[in-house]
Each structure stands twice: as C-alpha cells, then as structure tokens.
Image: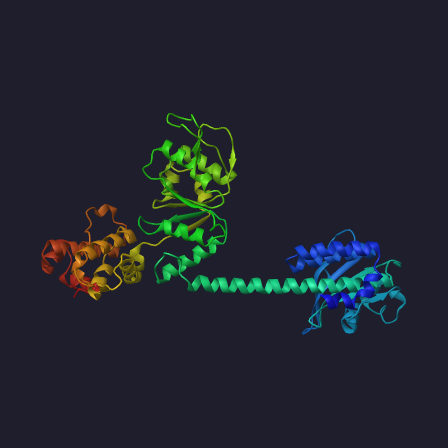
Length: 496
C-alpha cells in the first residue's frame, strides 16, 4: 500500500477539492463493499458525477475470447444501459491495448476513432477511458463519454481517473479474494455436512446421513423448524443439535414439554406472570420464552396445547413479543422457535383442533426423525455406544444378541433400546452380552403398532409361534397360511 501512494504522489497533489471529496466518498464505499457488482455500480456513479459525463460504462474484459461484458452502464439520470453496442468497442480496445488512461476531446474529427460505427450513431464527441488492472492484466475498463464538447474532460480529470482506477483495482482484488474464500468455505461446509456426525446423534445409515445434512443446513439460518417423529426417536436431540450448530449456540437453549400439562400452568411457564396475576403469584416471574432471549426455545409435543394458547404462540412467531400474565406491558424477544410432535398436525388442522395459520408458521422447515426400525443397521452401533456410556467399556456383544435386537420392531424406538440395554446389563454377570440377556417386550395392543405391514407380519408370526410352542404346522393353520410361507418368513428373519 505504501508503494501505491509513493507511485501516485504526483496524481494526489494535482487533485481538486471535488475530486478529493469524491475519493473520500469512494474509500467509504471500499470499506463496506462486499460484492463486485455493488462496488462497480458505485464507481460508475462517482465517475459520472466528478467529470460531469452523460454516460458511464464499466465492462469486464475476457482476455481469452477478447470480448467485453457489461457489469454496469448508466446515464447521468441513473437510467441503466444494457446494450454494449451503444458504446464503442474500438475505444475499449484502445484502452486495453495501451493499458493506460485515454482522453479524446473531438472523437468525430479523429480519423482513427470516427470510423467506429457506435461513435457515428451516438454522435460521441468526448471520451475518457481508464483500464482496471489486476495482477498485471486488464480486468475491466471504465468509459465515460458525451455528445457535447465537455471541457470537464481535462488532463486533471484523467489523472483523477488513473488514481481512482488504482483504488478500484485494490478494492476488486480484496472482494474477489473474499468471494473465493466464501465459495471455498461453502464447499468445505458441504463436505463437512456429509462427513461429520451430529453431536449425540449416533448412526451411519443413509437415512441418518440425510438427517444430519438437513440439520446442518437449517442450523445456519434462523428458520422456524418443525420436527416430527415417533416417541423416543430423539426429537429433542435434533433440536439441541440445531441450536449447537447455529450462531445462537452461546445463548440459552430451553425446552418445555407441552403434553399433559394444565393450560394455565403451561401459559405461566411460557410467558411468566406479574405479581398478583392469580392466587399464589407473590412476585413477578420471567417466563421461559423471555429467559431464552437471543437463543433457542424448544416446544415438545406442540400438538397438545390449547387453541387459546396457540393464538398466543402465534403472536410470538409473528411479532416476536410476549405479555406476561396479568401484565399490560409488551416485551420484545429474539428467540428461535423449534417445535416437535409425534402427531399428524395436518389432520388436527382438518379436525379443527389445531390452528391452520399456526401450523404454517411452525412448518416452515419440516424435519422427520426416522424410527429405529427404519435404520436397523444403526442398532449395533447404538448398542455399543450405550453400553460404553453406561460404564461397561470392556463389555462385548454376542452376534446373536445383535441379531435379536435387529429383528425387533421397536415401538419405543431409541428410548426403548436404552431401557432394554440397561436391563440386559443388570442380567449379565460376565463381560459378554448374550441373546438371553435381551428381554424384549411383546406387543400388548396391536392397534398402537406403527410399523410396516411386513414388520406386523413378523411380529404376529413370532407371537403365534411362541403361543404354540414353536409348532409350525399349528401356527400355519391358525394364520391360514401354508407351512412353506412360515418357513420363508423365518428364513427372512434368519431363524431357519
């Protein structure tokens, strides 16, 4: 930078007051500009203003194809020009060839310039042009022209534009490097999303990799997220992961379970209350939404809140404000809302038990956490993880035990798996977990089964075989199928 000023000290001494003010204005633009287009547009506006030109053009030069493309072109009235043919390509080529600022006062009478078609059509008289050089090559060209004999197109202005173009070159160099870094960062981020696991979310299945990518992407935004999935799948872990990966991760993450809680109690927990609002309200109390200001608030089982409370939550989402119970003061909050449910909210909307406008506010970015039966390949990894987490680091697992776990339909998902592993560790006296230590709950209510038809068949088959002491003939008769069908199904389970 010191060499830059040393090389241009003569130019600086010859600048007028207006030119100095314009340069000062431009340096402020340089400090704030983050995109090439905005920088170039501001640069053209300054050029037109300083030399009182009628038109200004900023083109990018493609050396390989020896061609120009408009970055921005304006008239003194700020009206945009989109047709490059309105400007002289011959004059642009002269600036490229000589790599220095050029000034022409009487273009029409210059035999070397008047031959250009655009000069004749536009009746151009005065032209001033400067190259924008980056890494020793012409990156672009600034052209200002007029149909009048502009006396403002002076040698002093030519010096100003030379100095100005150097500043533009420096700014472009900075912005282009920033854009390259930004692009590189996006590429690296996408790679990280596909490689690294989400904290506390264990799984290497394709469906879990897809979930991880979604969580990474939405975490970079402030979008409202609705997490769906069966009970025990880890919806709160997904919500916490979004918070931990977001820019709000240094602020609070608070959660509230909404199921089976009286409406007035839930409302006071969420919004807080003013002293005297109800019997027992002896002091002012801050609500959880207010306490989570700047951070993330997670509402689990959102489908269970009343219509009245839904209206108040809608206000939070739309206006980012709350009112404590018994108070009249409106309090602004900055909270990201994440909700979760194991119910079908759209069906509840049709029934009239859930507000449609609130549903669309919550369902901006839906994420489904898969049930454990849809990622059976993760069961061995999960089992090993939880065994170690429970302090049994030297415990090994018999393949038959894993096979037994993988063949179960898991109505309680990961939460149920944790309980079964905990029970198995109590039953296990040695350092190896066997199939006999795995005690699986059988279905007591088939109406609540949430698996696939195939899984239901397997569950029913195993239950009937157990009831008939493994007799395949009697089992086939009771199910009205052939013994061959029983054999094929057991083969699928790996039990034949």
